[in-house]
Length: 41
Length: 109
Length: 478
Image 1 (tube, helix red, strand yellow):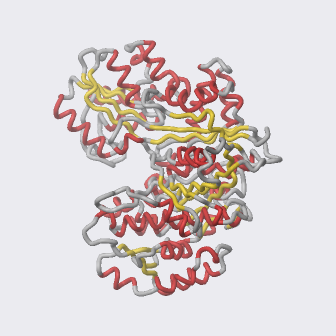
Image 2 (cartoon, one colour):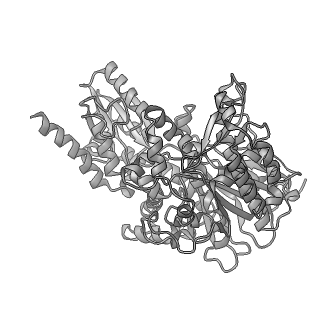
Image 3 (cartoon, chains in turn purple, yellow, green):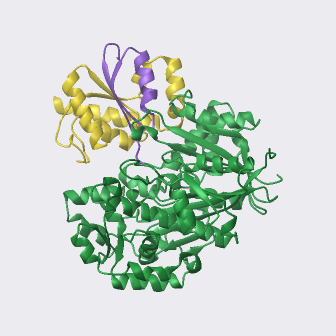
């Protein structure tokens, strides 16, 4: 699913944060090209 | 989704092309997940940012969807995402994002 | 060298200022008004009266008149607390004319001018205020004048919630964006509300202002000029305004988490014997007024983010009575801790508990991000405190402390509904200090309260990290 793919990560402070998603995706062979963590409070 | 984030996504699509890109969301509620999924596919439903009138048509998943979890290393997933999988409404969030994908594919036919 | 002393939370206060007119210069409303000027009319139409703000259950909880668990069912905005009063056990909710007067009193550089009828009304009301001795409203006369003349020179216009013209604020420096009128307005609102919180604390607890030796500011605003944007020092500015003549001060910055490290530093200064009494003060955050107004308008609600919140606390040497600030096991999110929610909670919650030989069940109340969900949910930002409590409960499940079926009970028993305005640092556990002090006092219900805050450092683009800190308050002699 992620091998050889470029991945945009849109995490959220109150949900799953971007670095946590990125760690999963990169271990599965994806290349994270953009990471945005949003904070709404 | 923050308008600035929307613009950086547009820029990333310009640079890498849409076909090789996957968006992975980490939003904490079904409502927020659906809005984010719509924003990177059919356009920002809140009309707040540059994706309001833009159909990027990106492939989008949520980190809490079963098919995403299945594609990831179980130990790393548990360490990075496990607690949130336990505390958030995982089925509803997954259904919200799957629902947006289904609506788009239906629209496309 | 002095021996280590036990630091205690001697007192805490919480105040609000109801400022529906300043709402339009909050960051989000100001940006939207620049795009569509007709929005001003909608904000006026949907603003709350002072009585509605006073009767709002979360505001009554904020000033200590009721506990957050006593707020009753939602929605709160259309079901006001009967007999709700402006003054509560922990502070007050100040109406906007008076607060504009207080901002003008905070302004030593004569940048603010109030329209004559507004200024006179503010002066008269402040003369009757229980803190009039400390606030010296007679000085207000100098700030009453012709704001139109100021306005003509490009000043920032100030209004009441009704739309009535109230005054103007001149720019502090014609070429320095860090001293623009909009920045000065934020800083004056922060200083005035912070000083109000500290002055109330001193009066309510009969603490001699001269006994405060240091004031740590933990507000969100950055005070400075073009050579030093976040120079500070709001702590000392507030100390001066609150009449703490023997104090100096400094600021601690850490996004929304700042009050918790500020409290830990204050307690450390006391423990080390550097100072006997240290105040920690967070003034209100004007840029966050109306942050989620679009959701409120969309749902035909009044625009509820119309209040500034400010909190003050005094940490002192052990008095044998006040709750102890446990410095032996402070939770902190380390650089190496990791960014996952579990890593953050391990660093902030379970690591200090493990160190003390305690479990999640040994904390009677968790004070975490206590944003009022009635403000955040209409704009799709969810129920922030509930999410925090569910995460804590999930930690208990993952650690084998209890089963999944006990999560709900854990949240209900050790959590509480959110009641704070969306004033980041104030909502981040800080707003609960006075309640926590009561719960840990004689006759109170708790033995230990954990205060925990997180800050989104990544927003400032210097690191991808967030931060967080926690400490435990414990019943004295318990």
